[in-house]
Image 1 (tube, rainbow, N blue to C red):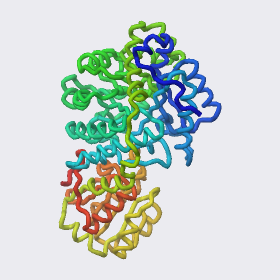
Image 2 (cartoon, rainbow, N blue to C red; image 1 turned 60 degrees about the vertical axis):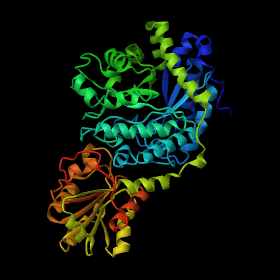
Image 3 (cartoon, one colour; image 1 turned 180 degrees about the horizontal axis):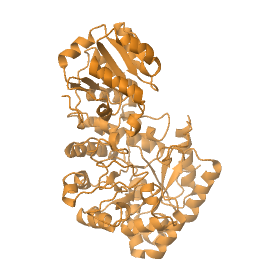
Length: 537
């Protein structure tokens, strides 16, 4: 099957080759689902053929986190998702009159959407790396290469939000941290790495989703700050990175009443055209966050209204439109031909970059995922010691080798059991026995693998178990190794003398680095990229 039905011609030719209706179709990026049925695939093929859709954004399934907001549908595991992705890309390209841009949210690699593909660390983990942005460049480079080999041209990443709100339910671990300079530096390294492979990028979520406590998938976050305050913090990475000629900026679904008292950012000409386009001087593609998200979709019950309103505000690409046919009609009826041409030109320039330049690295020049992850693991380990002398004492047996890893393969505790002859105990299944065993020990090594990466419902911790852990931290000499989101530390009620080692990820490479650290073979080189409620060091 030929995955490239027709070559992209230069814009100077396409300008006259495509009809106005075809150009309007190019504005739409539809959601494509890897695990769709054959009927659903054929329906997508008809939409592409009949309405000249410009781009697709791939998701795992209609039950995946990005689409299944209430979490009521079970996500079905598919061992063959990667091959299915490549098959669908070929089919959809074959259905298109003009080559499609294939996009994906691959912030930490294809694994964000596809099973059995390389997964790299979350942005917050990369934020802990000190004086070695070359590693972040390599992550961006490898992700870009993986995308291109899969047939994905456009990675809707990185997140450049400054996560200043610990309760943020949707950004958090996806941000490089809470310091604007560090976020900028790490995002730039990631962008350069990805750019070296010819993969398109998108910095998000303009004008800044970091200081929110509302999930925009479910409701509309309000950021009640002046433009001066935004420029000093939230907008800072966007200003700096736009100077580096990024391919696109994604606009989040946010309410900023001091900038626009009537419209959310998605449909605000004051924010999109006035601020981003005119004041900040961004000339590239402006893309919406998913238009199915309840923050904006519930405000526009009539099919096609939201798409037309976002386009009128200055949007170029309408991502995850659920009503493309009605949207195209509304845009053709309400927008001028010159306005449609303006966005079409920007979109077509991206296609020229992808299909006419075609340069990207050979896989043989890249490190494999495991080797790169191992190097990162050794560079992010972070010590937060309130009582360093006590750490030395705890590490000398006997200590209670305790863990909370209800759904993870806990290699760390197993290695401590074998290396130090200290039996491993699991809190999720052995709590009654552990309570008895705890009476015999003053020193505890506690490895924590949080059930969830997001803060909702205390990161998935059971209330009784969380209370037990808090009491133990208060009463015992406890050394914690955390294999997860560092914001978890805020719910543990740490003491001023508590001792913590952050490993950030639960990958085997990060567990191995933590074991090496416990044994004194690996030093902690990382630095916490956020501020905690209870600082330890």
